[in-house]
Length: 350
Image 1 (cartoon, rainbow, N blue to C red):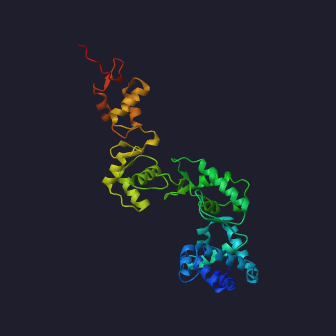
Image 2: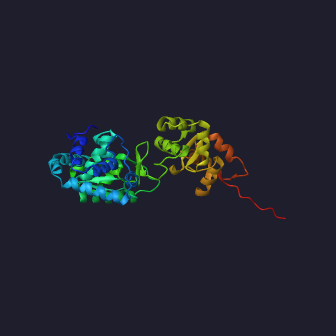
Image 3: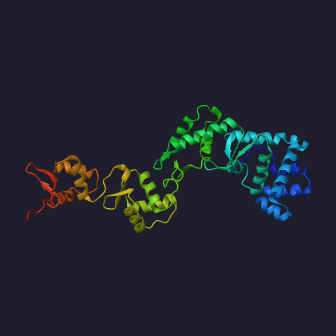
């Protein structure tokens, strides 16, 4: 998205740096990556370069920034800082550092100059990355507090298994932000706010959840398969699972490897010849014999039609396969009333 700002960050910082003595100017240039080398140097690296301590470098940096803020040139550039403030408001009032910089320019050098202007601006406050949130800037203390609290509530309402559509998570998030100005309540801004959280994330299918969950932080074939089958919404052949993984995740998925991974993971249930479903859908595990046994344990004696009906809800198999299993006296017994029960193993009396 192209920037709407008229200011030229490099021209503005050049004017602002002109008020500094040479060494202070050089240290700010190195510290913020304003020269040909866009890499920002650490306090320690700059200290070694000048033969001074890192604490002395920090003192010079703070002195330089304060001198710039007190200068007449700084006052003359009020329009530039007002434009940046307007940009921050248009992006949501509290914005990820990377979002601001990338919105303005893809050029790393220009981004570094804009970053210095953010540091210098009295209206801008940077919140450093912590365990919950990424580096972000804001222009309104209360708004920032409200967004942070809403993100915490949203995270606390999720479990590792949850996968939420983007429209739903936006709606839920806004419920926690009822006191926030209506001008911020649009999908693009809300999605930017969601990106501030380190605990909430989005998977390649556009579904949201806890960032550390395997449903979001996919690590391998099994996680890819889970998302593919869940998206499909019904049992699917393992060959199709492998094909979908390659299409959606752009990962090489060998059919045999995919099948082996599905067999090993309890999240998946084989419900037919090569057909897999998710365990969370309620399908019973085990072969047809095991399914019949579980059905009889749950419902008591049943006739042939009742058993077939219930098994077909669990397995994609032919009725004849069910009957072959039922006719094995080792596992099932047909009573005089035509109903089947589980064969009871009688101990031999000596």
